[in-house]
Length: 362
Image 1: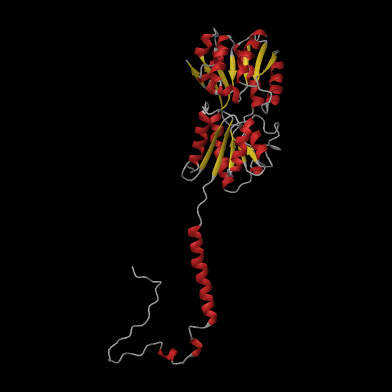
Image 2: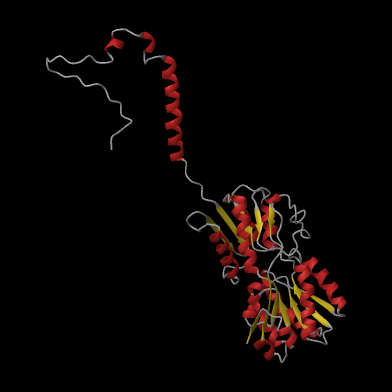
């Protein structure tokens, strides 16, 4: 290909044959002075144009493409027992064109030292922090007021003080709510249906977990409507789980309602086994308990929440402010029953309850 940017000058013969006059000879001789190409005005303009054209091109070529960095903060220990959450989040990102390791980097933080790890994400200057639950959102909020925080799920974002309102969150936090206070009433109703003589329910939770107070308040209202009394048992850490089940049996509980949090989620196999040994019908908020041998679960489809959290990350990376993005409420719920677990404790699930289940494990 001919190099068009190279200036070509007229050729001159070295022999004695007479050549045609060069068109530039008159300029060299001083004729037509008003058409001199050396006119300072045009030379200056031409130089400026070249500076912008080539200088801008060089700057663009040297400017590296910034790869967004996301911090994913989870209270679950390094064993990652609820891996469906992270898988759903990855799926949501892929659906939006983000591929981990290619055009997006994710710092996965799975551990119990949450305050220090939340601060570590801030030190890494991530573009967005994704929190997997109320506890992690609380630590992320303490660590930064500038980096956007996306809640993949939260029991009650307004009640916990994370956002000003669902419609206008304000601040640097937005994301999705799981409506835990409202759903706890439905869980009590389901226990009443499978245990007609239900009079006392032991509620296992962690008082320091954000949103627990709001959930208990709604659960008490629902229980009162069915003439059921609640026995709240606080479980500060995993070593207190067995003590809580002994207290439930001693308190003559007819059933158990286990609130979802990092402590129980990490030890869900133990929780399910203790409920069976105590012969107590138990209901949980997420399906992983039932898949591990628990009796039944009713709650939001967590995988859907974590997949949708990716849409918030996408909007923020494209310039949206978290405070202007309304908090979404869950759209999909699921009710799962494990008949093997029912048989183990000698419980018969009524047909009218079975037909409403989204999945029945036989």
